[in-house]
Length: 246
Image (cartoon, rainbow, N blue to C red):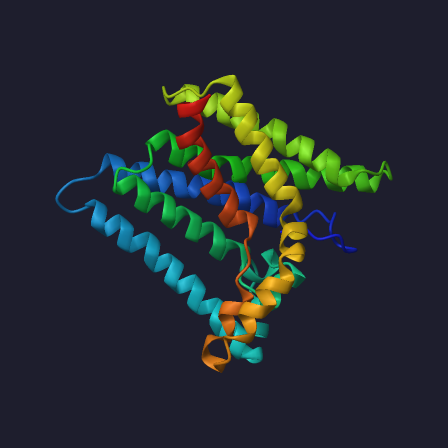
């Protein structure tokens, strides 16, 4: 998520390290499972594993929403709590969205709707480009150059284009230059301007929220099109469709 507030351009090294490390960890798990796939480690177990992680993280977040004491305990954890931004203290954690994206991509892969290269690209773009954009914005802001968002968008575009170009060729399923630039441009806009699109749609979303009156379902109103979810899914959709038209 990106917000035009005082902390927009802070650099949380641990959080950005987790973006990259989490991406690599998910890919390692995927390839280990793929290589060991057989009578014991079958696709159904992989899907159960990833969706169980989603369930655990969602449960932790909902528990935080309804228990201030548990929220404070979780925020005080040495690693998990330090990764949270202030906005996430009362909303779903970015890691929850990222694991949800991985579960969706894994499911589509297992059902033959997503290629291996597409899954790897989708997770890798966010893992590399998000820290690159955040670091660029921080440095531009630190030296008072202005136009932080524009520089961040450019950094995200360039780094994601390099990831798309390099990995697609490494996996033997190369994307054309037009596809690479188009995908990189679209996801860079998503990463930089999701907040504005959500703000523009707020009158509509508030109308929907008013109809969710039950206290037990209040957490639904805290769902947000977080870039940790939207970007991997968007890359997968674009990487699947654009080669057919470009």
